[in-house]
Image (cartoon, rainbow, N blue to C red; front, side, top):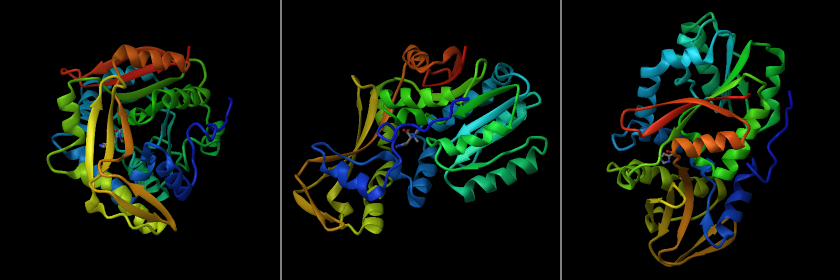
Length: 320
Ligand code: AVI
């Protein structure tokens, strides 16, 4: 099996300060969305997942509940489930419970505390499933090395949550190619994607009436203040999220409400009134569009499951 890291210029794993200074020096100021998830940001994201306006999490969960038997059959007996970015491993439990004689579960996550607590929970609940927790960044080669010691009948990568939507299509293809490089013929990928839909529904999901997404977005400025010795005034920025139909994505921005200067680690950044910092993209796919992406990354789309309102899809693809 080829094991190689994703090139640094594609899905980089670089330093917070370097990324912030570089992003805010661009003409369209940007901040990489991975920095939204410090401890406070991760807590806020958990609250987002519970919001009425944010339909993604509950819709995906309902699809899994409704179609879990078919999904488990599709995965087949003796599979090793590999989950990059597994977090608290909650979503995989239903699948693990329904699989026929799974050969194990291999979650990968950067947070040792969360991953080891999840391993203990799963082992207590499903003692027949061997859990091999791999701690680190799933875009790096080392965290996949442990797979060498496991020889299941097949491997299936589990990547729910529409996380793939936070990569541009170009980077999503690189990531899926990287996943494909960890698999062999007959192995599979079970992946969740949010579907293209009415912009009102989409914009409500990212501009919720309880203002949790606003707090989540602004938290990145608070994080820069506390970790990088900066002086952002959060009251000088507003949250904005809108659907861009040509790019098929919701863009999240922070809008400067007045002309002002911010200092970060001794460097000055000017903000004009109305200027924005682009903080996140959340790409939406049609079924055919995502199938094209899977194919270009080396997967063969096999089938998908949707909710009755066609809001969200879970795809199964394999290496042919
Ligand atoms: C993690 N990710 C799939 C979420 C999304 O919907 O793109 C992140 C998020 N950003 C704002 N709300 C939720």
